[in-house]
Image (cartoon, rainbow, N blue to C red; front, side, top):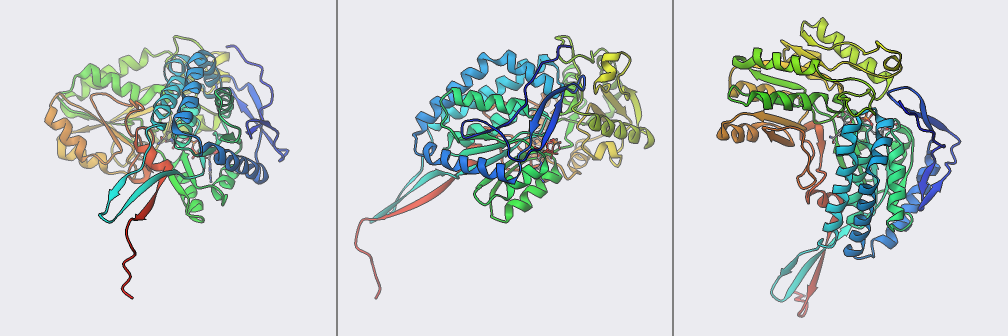
Amino acid sequence: MTEPIFETVSLWIDGAVTSATSGEWFATHNPASQVVLANVQLANDEDVDRAVQSARRGFAEWSLMTGAERGRILNRAAAILRDRNAELAHLEVLDTGKPISEAIAVDVLSGADCLEYFGGMAATLHGEHFDLGGSFAYTRREPLGVCVGIGAWNYPIQIACWKSAPALACGNAMVFKPAELTPLSAMKLAEIYAEAGLPAGVFNVVHGDSRTGEALTRHPDVAKVSLTGEVGTGKKVMAAAAQTLKHVTLELGGKSPLIVFEDADLANAVSAALMANFYTQGEVCSNGTRVFVHRSIHDEFVEALRVRTNAMTIGDPLAESTDVGALISRDHVAKVLDYIAAGIAQGATLVCGGKRVDHTEMLRQGNFVEPTIFDACTDDMIIVREEIFGPVMTVLTFDDEDEVVTRANATPFGLAAGVFTQNLARGHRVAARLEAGIVWINNYNLTPIEVPFGGVKQSGIGRENSIAAIEHYTQRKTVYVELGPVDAPY
Ligand code: NDP
């Protein structure tokens, strides 16, 4: 497994690499080997304030540019991302532990898609006109100001793009904090934006832990916080943001149902269930981790899952043939193994997996856990109720449509859901009844930039991607224009 040699990583403020004043550092590791990839400077309150003030200056210039000018810069940045896909995907694999085949196909290119989409949209943003007889009114669609993006560690560069592109397209400036465990690619994105011609201060990067996130969320000059993270973090961010009534977008966790009816194309549903649980080692927020299978096809379905899971290749994330890479950290491995132990203790049937993979020296160094399937699960089990965020699938059996919809909805989460059936009416009927921000019929986990993405219930507030994101990064100002005399009653 090749190891890179990295210099230290500082902050990105005012269009340049900038040292933190805190004097604090933290290391970021390769999850597949534990090798330190870089020592990263932590931003304290003073550093956060410098980044926010830089963003205020950047906003003053950027918000006066036309949408077309902003769009051209975003499109140039998208082209650079595409040109550097191989290099950036490699970096993302080193920092996250995910397989290279996925990073090459999805992580960087979906970021480029996002920059192109919102780059194109920038010139189309507009207000409305109201004819009121002797007067008229119009609305101006204005940016919010300084927006903060706070990312999770599973899709670092994609998350940085999903937050920054719509914010910047609308004329806002951003301070972005990547997750402490995956700080590297956000700095590359900052360099790329600068190379594309983004004015200094419009996109800033600060590194750190929850203290840095809290400082950003509390800052009085910040107008909006967009977080991708756990439900608990979302609640803290919302509470802190309330102190100055900041706007929030919260993309949080899930425990999504994937429902396979008796008339489903079985091979297709098995493929989707595997992708919905083991892609990126199961570290995907929208994963369909509660797989509800109709009793009549249960045995055949579970056997197909077992055979195909046992054929998956676990190991070196940089190898083209790898299907399952390394989990993000040792702590996360321990958490996932605790959940597996809880599943066994509560009586679920282990179909396959269930162990750390450590039979070679290389695997022992890394955070590898077997893709794991539990059958005979019940709704009250911990592994069925809580988000594991690792390669653990739970299979549950059902008998009829009403029953499965009720059970699928019996969770505080509401991020995503899947329905597998060849009955068109049933597919749409069930999709309408599921409490989820996105429902896939006969596929799973696709997130094209054109369609809204986000959760209901405790999985989040607001939507990323699509035209819906524009609503979350702009506000309307109404201008009323009188054409006649003021009609005063006194
Ligand atoms: P966390 O909630 O632990 O962290 C998310 C980000 O918030 C990190 O940058 C973290 O910093 C920061 N943070 C932590 N505490 C605070 C705070 N009090 N105030 C402000 N910022 C804070 O999530 P993970 O990184 O562990 O990511 C996994 C979670 O993210 C899962 O629940 C997953 O479902 C969810 N997720 C949701 C997605 C969606 O689109 N709905 C997509 C991807 C993931 P630090 O890194 O230092 O802890």
